[in-house]
Length: 322
Image 1 (cartoon, rainbow, N blue to C red):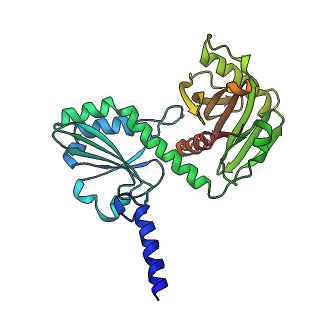
Image 2 (cartoon, helix red, strand yellow):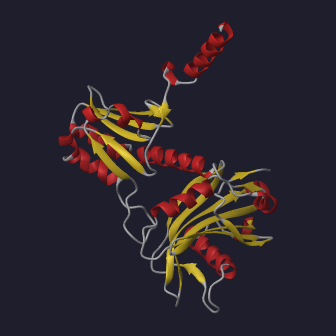
Image 3 (cartoon, rainbow, N blue to C red):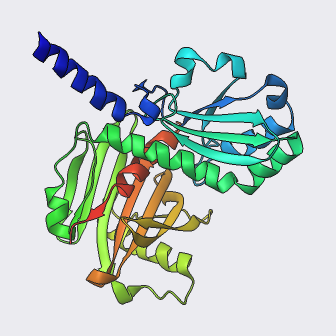
């Protein structure tokens, strides 16, 4: 009996030490790309709420339809208790003597990411939202990608072929299949209702792209050439970047390596086929190459935000093994 009590005591001690401030936290809840906003109803219906909606519920770049970055559920402070505190992501607006922004992790559940905005007046809270909107968006987006990769990792497809061909690992679900495995070009696919989701991986010589020239023009030319040669469509028709809309270009990192991120639309002329894509061109100087990672979706007349989000999460899971 004494041994049993001792074992229980040790287990409880370890569990408490593993939780912030000695708290035992339950699992968080909430769908991906859903955000709980906690603030008084009058602030939500006024300028403060309008600015939050503008920054966090604005349209996602590179999609054919208007789809919000996050689905937002607002509640007043008094409702944010008990089970409702288990939301995986939350934004809390409070009045205080000085303006501040605080990121809190695992405050009421695990995993959980919260941001607390404080200010003495509505005007100062709005200024804080405008000034730190990029940080706020990045904080939630990184939390969502981390959670998506965690869920993906529960049932992974074997990525050894990618390691052998390109020296990388990549986490993607077992529902995907290898559609093409050439020495220098991989095409990975997943069937979905009324369409499919696709991943391509290939490498190009380091000297192929001139950084002093038009970067986005060079990236489009590269993806149209290589993608058009390797993505199978009807004879005489090519898989290319949509000519009517310029892609969005930004800089990021993949496994610590600098990369260009391009979001836009692809098309197959004459087939009325089109959809969104996300492309990462990774500067792998060590191996004297650019590694190109791309995800694209074909899903006519349907929302595609969550599909592109899954593909971006997969591509961001890439790690270099050498």
